[in-house]
Structure formats: structure tokens, C-alpha cells
Image (cartoon, rainbow over all chains, first blue to last red; front, side, top):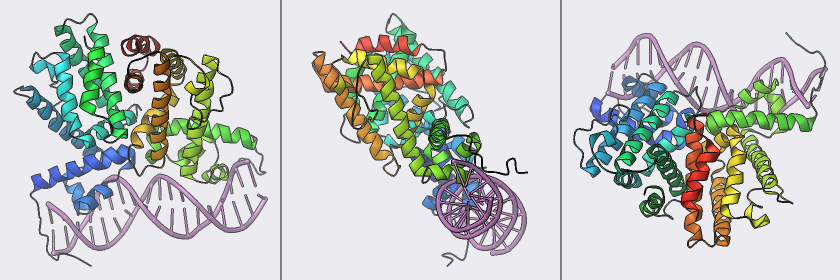
Length: 206
Length: 206
DNA sequence: GTCTATAGGTAGATAGAC
DNA sequence: GTCTATCTACCTATAGAC
């Protein structure tokens, strides 16, 4: 039942790697780290598990690289929307607010507009964030640090806006945005994510 | 290596069942439905998998019964805090607001205070809710219906408060509350869940 | 009510062929 | 760069003993 008798790579190593990462985003978004299998990913790619493991050391490595890739894609997209230069896409090193002097409302509007176009990526973060609440999770530390950095960035931006309590406003804004994301994902297309966020931001960010 | 030569049940069937459910709450809160195993639960209970499967038909049944149990415990606790009578604990049939005429702020304050005492239960809901975004998930329909009912209850309460747009206020309140829960769970005890919610509720609920 | 034993399946990972 | 083959481990579930 062999389809090909000769080993004929249909993709370059780089292209295959990126293709695998995009496929993995979908798999982890659906089942989480504990639930997804490298077999699922390999089958969706049309290769075997052994083939996939040539590109990534193992399941945990695949998770780490997928998150790094997702961050990269996401940060670049948000930065472009804000007209910011010189962003590498490393969320833990860079951040957004550091690179510009936008207000919190502008930053979050750009974030929401970007996310609205990529529900699968939002699902990935939503599920991994909940999974990673456990101290034993492979990316527990990553998500703890990520939250700290986001809150710091948002607080910086809020401070520029002249908000009375920037830390609290940052906490409230992040909470409301992530909560609204869940409603949006759960209701499919019944709610207008961008419009609802705009209304909510007006209540939280003066 | 047998410890006991005779079958000596140390718990009644009812007590064992409830003990299993409480153990399962912790296991699913950590790994989700896809990640937890009935073996984990059985070992934590000090019984075998076969022993556990006498009480529950299988893994999916265990999930469904655990959710039902969690809802029951939760709804009773919130209702008691509100001084409401006649609540059965079935979140999909009952709801909270239908049984009383409290305002939205009061209902949500009681919810948050109840949740603050049971972080494991909150983690269970947070993780399952994200997992269940997938249409294939065993409790996908359950969580969709749950959200619909919560929003309806909250909108009812907001309407009693005389809010201009009760549906939108309900959406915003649920979003903010669930988002804040994630911050609280991620930061362990660094943030005062009840106090932060009070501040956030003041912004959202007039 | 819980056990042993086991069937039957799926998982992650490695070795070596091509 | 991807394959086949295989190992080891783990998981759910069932049958039947006690």
C-alpha cells in the first residue's frame, strides 16, 4: 500500500516546519497539550510520526515551538496594526507598549481587531492558559510570565493615559478582554467582538 | 502482596461515589477531560479502575456526573448565601435569578464570594469551558447552554436594576468576572478576588 | 463493592532503511 | 526528509472471582 516508492520531499525543511506549526496550532487549540497527539498532527500533514519528529525533538518541544511561533505571528500583526517598527515577535522579551507611546485603549483595540481575525489562535491561548494553571504543566512558567508582562505593559500605557490606578486598570482591562474572547468564541458569530470590546473598554478605561 | 484477603468495603456506596466525584474534580481541574485518566482518580481513591467503574459507566459518564455534582454544590452554596429557598442545584434547569429578586450586583457578589472559597471548582469550570469550545467535546452542548442560561439570568437581574441595555450588561459582567477569575487563579493569592471584583462591578453595573 | 486478569487499543519515541 | 518497524508504556473497558 505504499504510495511513493522513493523519498520525494514535497516541501523544503523550512516550509514543512511552518506547515507543521500551523497544523499544530489547530490541534492544540482543540485538545490542549494533554489531549492532542503528534499522530494527529502528522496525519493532518500527510506524514508519519517519525517524519514529524525529524523536525521537532518531541511533543513538549513541538508545544514550545508552536507557542513561540504563535507569539511571533501575533505580535507582528498587532505591531503592524499600530504602526510600530522593530518588533521581533518575542512576547516575553519585547512586549508591545515598550515600543510606542500609544494609549491603552489604542493598544487593546489593535489587539482585539487582530484577534478577531484569528479565532483559532485565540482558542489556543484560551485553552493553554487554563491548562497551564497547573504548576506541573510544561508551559506553566511561560504563561505566568506572559501575564506579568502583559499587565506591566498595560499599566504603563494606562499611566501614560493619566489613569489614577494604572495597575488596577490593567488588571480590569486584561480580565474583561479575555472574558469577552470566551463569549465570542462560544457564540461563534453571534456577537461582534470588536464592537462589544469597544463598549466594554469605554467603561474600564477612562 | 494482597493487603486484604476479604472484600471489606471501607465506605458505603453513596460515600464512595461522592468521594470519587470530589477526587475527579481535582483531576479534571488539572488535566481537563482529554488529559485526566480514570486511573489517576482510582489511585487517589485507593481503589482499582475496575472498582471505580462499578460506580460510573465510563470516563464520559464520570465527567457528566462530576459536572452535575459540581453544579449542585455550587448552586446550593450561592443560593444559601443569597438566602434563596427551593434550589435543586441543577444549573441548566434552575438558575439563580429566577428564584429571587436580587439585583445583578448582589447575585454576582455572592457568586464571587462563593467561588473565592473553592479555587479548584473554578479551575474545573475554566478548563472545561475552554476545552468545550470544540464542537466534538463531550460537554460542548452543556457549556453552550450554560452560558445562554447565565446570560439570560444576568440580563433579567440587570433589567430589574433598570439598566438601559440588560443583555449587554450581562455579557460584560460575565466576561469580566470570568476573566478576573483567571487572573486570580494565575496569581494564586496575590490579588484579592472579592475586592477586585467589587471595583470591576462598579464600572460595569450602574 | 472491590478485586485480579486480561483484552484490545493508542501513545511517544527510537533505530535503521531508503 | 520521510519511511517502516518496533519497543515500551499507558489507557479504557470487560469478565468473572470473592
